[in-house]
Length: 97
Image: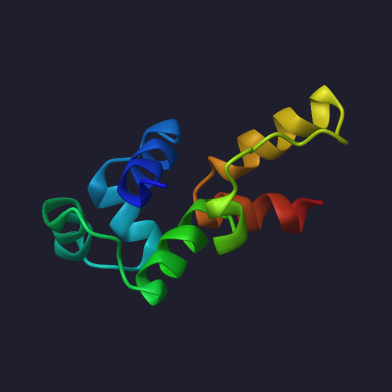
C-alpha cells in the first residue's frame, strides 16, 4: 500500500490543503511536507495523528476494500459526509445528536 498516496487521497476527498491537514492533525506543516518530500511512511504516532484528523482508525486506514456492505445508502452517505467534516464540526454534530 502506498501510504503517502492514501493520505493524499483522504486529504483531497475532504478538499484539504497540507496546511488544513496539519491543523486538523495537530502536526506542523513542515511535518506534513517532510512526509511527502521523503516519500517514506511516517512514524506510527504521526500516522495516528493524521488518522485522527480524518476521523478514522489505523485499521480503517489500511483497509484495502473500503466498502461498507451492511449499511443502507443513506447510512453510507452519512458516514462519508461525517468523515469529511473538521473535528470541531464532528463534535458539534455528535453533541447535537
